[in-house]
Length: 189
Image (cartoon, rainbow, N blue to C red):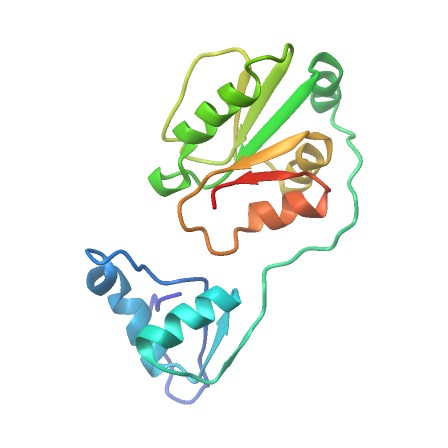
């Protein structure tokens, strides 16, 4: 998204852009290095049509292409014994996943889970990903921290639904991966 070191002068540079900050109070400060890279690169690979349109609207057109996030749609089978036990012991399993920070809205995901599971017995929520910014000691909420990619796909393949209430998440990989496993996604509009 933004450079981490000086670019070599004799090579073409392609910027992979998965979005820009667009809150008015963050636009200038948070986008400074992203915009510098945009202005100085040879081409851009945008993550989505939304990202392309947002960027070109604010910073002008640029040579590039849109390559949406994606994954093979091969359905995973649950082979992990702990996951098999969770599936056996719970009528409904929900999942949420992110590299957690406030914009990902873990607290609100848990509140949505509480509403969804209100009239259900034997439910659980699996919270995958690092740095959860909201934690509870409830036995029906399982925090995994970071786990291997294959295990994430197994969780998506057995879950009844994913809860993803992040603010302004342009094209989240976790949603693409959940959908690849036929896991319905509950998301914000």
